[in-house]
Length: 179
Ligand SMILES: CC(C)(COP(=O)(O)OP(=O)(O)OC[C@H]1O[C@@H](n2cnc3c(N)ncnc32)[C@H](O)[C@@H]1OP(=O)(O)O)[C@@H](O)C(=O)NCCC(=O)NCCS
Image 1 (tube, rainbow, N blue to C red):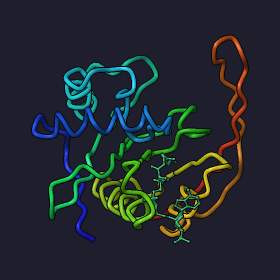
Image 2: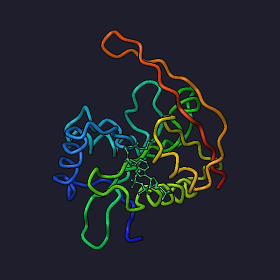
Image 3: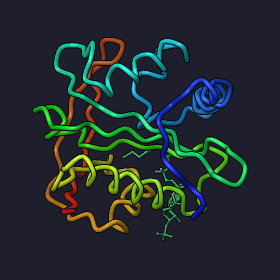
Image 4: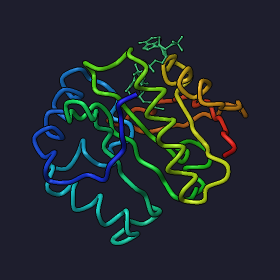
């Protein structure tokens, strides 16, 4: 497939903004985009650079590399992927090493499987030997992408979060991929 992972740059400024808008409009989960939901693109580009270098990490955050997934033929931003270089307790239980997403209008073409394959190559280069990837137990497409890349199911864990004073309970499936 004609996809590659690259570090974010200003060249993709408008496409990153559009990516964010389209996810918000579709009410789609913005996995693998770091803080893009909360920040403007300038702030997000700076934060991505910093976190890639392990600089200015908020408490409890680890070094993480943000990638854009670009289709070479037309230079279109079709996905995003983030690699957390190590696991904190939270990441070990719920978040995993990798988060990713595919643009709303580019789904169902096999890109979800491919972005994860490319992400695993990057993990290997970082020296990560066993990659943890999690997905909500309701996320059929994500589970298929993980299984297609050799994910071995370990267990499910429940995350309780408070949203607008309400406790929301989510069940995450945890998969390991040995590199
Ligand atoms: C999960 C996600 C990355 C999948 O991307 P995608 O490009 O559609 O995935 P693919 O085209 O490679 O499809 C993978 C499999 O899921 C299936 N699939 C795709 N969308 C689906 C859907 N909405 N419902 C059920 N199955 C679906 C495909 O048919 C394919 O199945 P197959 O293995 O039987 O062929 C994408 O839906 C997404 O960005 N979702 C929002 C963010 C997210 O959930 N990220 C994952 C977090 S862990």
